[in-house]
Amino acid sequence: MVGFGPAEAMDEAPAGHRARDFLPSAKTVFSTAARINYSAVDGLPLTRREYINANDSSRALLNGVICGISRYLEEEGYSAIPFLQGTDRKVLMGDLSLKHAAVVAGLGEFGLNNLLLTPRFGPRVLLGAVVTDALIVPDPPLREQLCDLCGACLKACPVGAIKELKDFDRKKGGAMDKYKCSHYINEILEPEYGHHSCGLCIKACHVGKVEKVQKSIQAKLK
Image (cartoon, rainbow, N blue to C red; front, side, top):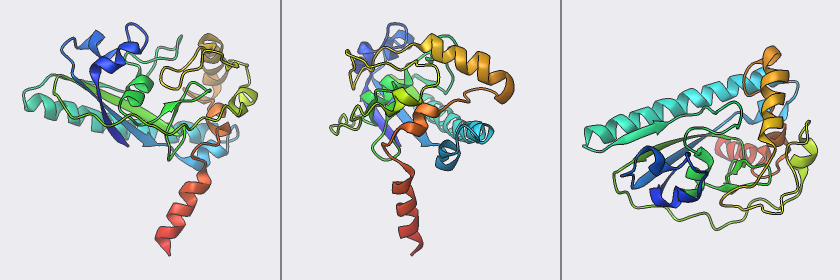
């Protein structure tokens, strides 16, 4: 998935994580998302190691694409900074807020689980972005509302980090206990399984469930 959005629209992201914080002359945010393996997600928590492998594979694909696009834009005379998958371990946020970038570029919306939800794959994606001073025609924002506030992610979280959010905003996200989530991932799970090894809120989300992808694949095979 790819999309383009105006850099100034990211000014509503948290301070220090906006496009123009890194490139004051930025005009465009290029956002891209790669699907992760559905079966590894559905098998959690038994398939924690396989889930990590699936994430690493999609992350490598994204990183190559984002860095290649940035080099191309520089060769055309523009400034371009690639922002790859990776987060501050304490607050679970990258240098650039990749989720806000994806919303600005029309790829999806925030869900109650504070993850990006996409129409086709739900939250089962990894994100990357390029911030550039090249002026590119933006894609329209997503009009469809994907999250129905069913609360499945709240029930699935093993440490209760996701809460009923009165200030939930589909374009900005909402507050959650990221420190509690981070501690569980980095201090409890990582010593045994490795990085980013939870994923239960992703598994619980019904948006973009695997049945849709399976039907698409089966239709192509007929």
